[in-house]
Image (cartoon, rainbow, N blue to C red; front, top):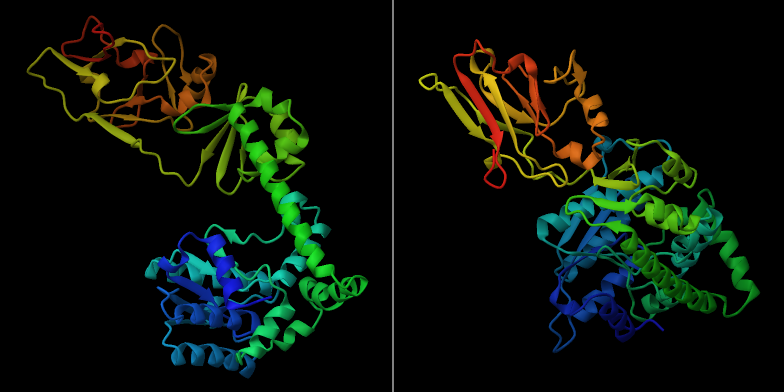
Length: 449
């Protein structure tokens, strides 16, 4: 039964020391969210309690004319009466309301609004009024989508600091609480229409299921709990398998392609799904792809490198600079001008070696720079005839993708390639018998040149 004490118990299961946080409540004006706000307000006002401070956010979508304004008034009046900070977003023409996919548009809009408030007011937790009937509807929707155990587990009670403390309580219990405590709320009559999938499930399918068993919803609640426990167990096992397949690297997530390919399709899917590769038909392509092939999800680039799957976070900013000025001049008062690269660039595991290149300074255009490879880079490698693309040079040297990303290209101010560090310099700029001023670029290791 929904009471202040049972609600407080649910909240305490979601957040450690919940009274020490300030919450942002998403309140629409319906029975669910107005009960949620009243419960929080009741906890805040409990004598001797240190309080559950909260603020309220409301969206007026302007979709139902005067009814939308009356919804806003109910929420706003409640906040003014109880001295609660009220945040309002009123939809206008600038929001580009679409003719289709209204629900998706509205969801994206409200969560963007909520996030802006949280960042501005430093509010960690967003609280929504999802309840047990919402959980059942979501289960049925996901069942129709073949969404697997994660989908059938339904709506999480704590999902990245979005809290849903009413998930254990039915719609009936919420209405009873509202009636007993004289809580004012507004009914959204559009929910009575079965024009959306969720509304059709709510208005037609769920009532039919309820008629089959007097304890249907309570039994579903138990089944949902079992599914969540199963999901948590499976996720733990999947993580242990992934840990065994992982190759240590401080900058990238790397998995053994060969070992992962030996796992079941289910394990492959669950691991790759974590990185956004959740299309089943895409997974066989990943394991059949040629070396150096790449796949892209929203947040990751997956690169095939021999027997490794390399995941690069596209949102993570590299700490390595894009370009390094090596030297901006040449001292022509000296016949030899040495530059030690050991002080400028990081070592590259597996290809560290000393090198010593001598250039004719008069052939160079300063400043000299270090940068990473670009498409179309080519040079004339010393010891070879003709020119070669840098990308082909990398392939010939059988360098891994990670090694290629770390290798620096030495260039002059015209962006001509002077050499690929630490492998080979460009012979066009090398010192010869006519050279008067020599620039020495070297990498010193173990006190050797």
